Length: 89
Image 1: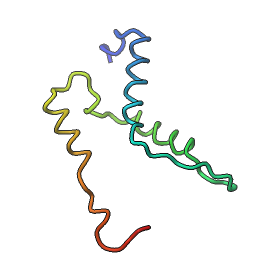
Image 2: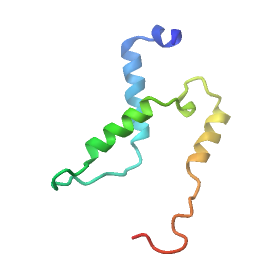
Image 3: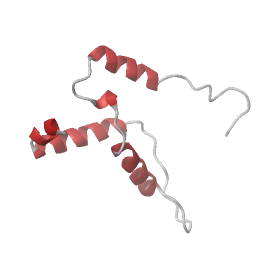
């Protein structure tokens, strides 16, 4: 916490924006629904943002070693067998 307090507010905001830009680069979007009581992307994104802001993520630690960062990155892109068995479409 003491390290974070030493960072200028401009730098902290820039790092925050840059990190969230990396997180949202998936290209996934949610179409806006006009149905009553629909949960649209803005609500879902707020929820995800809240949860992720409340959870530490070592991959975005500025002091992490490059080998550890690469290892964490590899763990994010494992095939989850989502196309096995029956079709979910």
